[in-house]
Amino acid sequence: PLKLGGEGQGTEQIMDRMLHERRLGFTMAPVVTFVLVMVLVSFEAAQAEVHAGRALMARIIDEPGEGNGDNAVELKMEDFNSTLLASPSSWAIVEFFAHWCPACRNYKPHYEKVARLFSGHNAAHPGIVFMTKVDCALK
Image 1 (cartoon, rainbow, N blue to C red):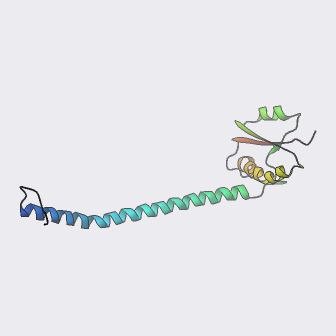
Image 2: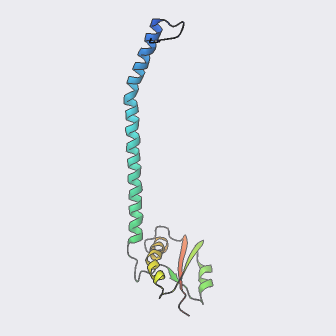
């Protein structure tokens, strides 16, 4: 048997409750739909902004450097300490490499991209990191 209410509830109260629940459920559907659509639209807009930011950063990193493309300062044994101490940057990255080393040659384009990002002509973050390199094969 169908149980419509507890003790002390009249038929009018049960009908009022059922109408209220039906009306509330019916009127909330457009509101819920609207909120879901707004969440999806804002999510897609945020994704588009992230994609645009990544594309800009990739363009800055991938554009060719000026001159010979070396954006990292080459250090020698004579000027290693003085150049690092004279740098206005708080941080320094020193790449130790050998020009004849195949792994070093494969890594060079990636290091140059990072160097371009921090100290290139159109650096995205200039003056934060001092990018340097030392050719260990030279005496």
